[in-house]
Length: 248
Image 1 (cartoon, helix red, strand yellow):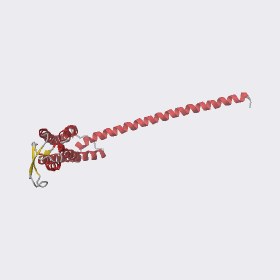
Image 2 (cartoon, helix red, strand yellow):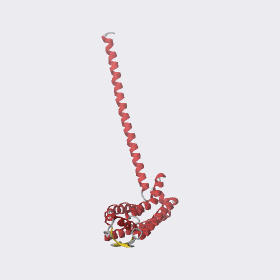
Image 3 (cartoon, helix red, strand yellow):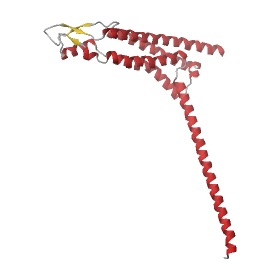
Image 4 (tube, one colour):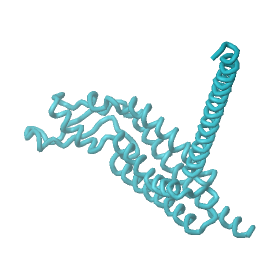
């Protein structure tokens, strides 16, 4: 082929290559843009699902939300921080007369059948169970807050969970009064006859008894406030349910 015949062919080939290059880049740009749009849409949908799940897990009443805040922050802070400061080293500073390790341990186990921190931690977990079970069921069924108050079945189940919380708090109050009493005395009379036959009763010193009395009073107060909030939440549910039926 001559030079004049080759030049137009080269121009056509170069034009084809340039057009292919342009189309490729445009297709790649469109593909990346489409991927970003799909990714953004997926993130938005996931965020909406998480937001709806969070709304479902929230109590349907204002008092219930305040109770959750009060229950989750104040009581846990009081127990985790101040409880450890007051009761953390109680066994180490608990001493009897005569001051012997085996006698101190024996009398301390008699004085504390269960440590207060363990008892209150079990109380918190146990009281949380009814509400946690209901909200987990509501989250699995995608039940929102309004449905809980609008549908009679969900309303009854939620009221039952609140009543169970009240019953568990009352039981915990009764157990706490029998295990720890309402006041911590500075002296504890320990019956050590099973450990030592030389003496039947020995005196033991309880450390920081005044601080423990204050802490006990605070825990009783928290339990009472929680019960009152649960009762108020039931009245709020009934009033809102009555208002919903009246509007219909």
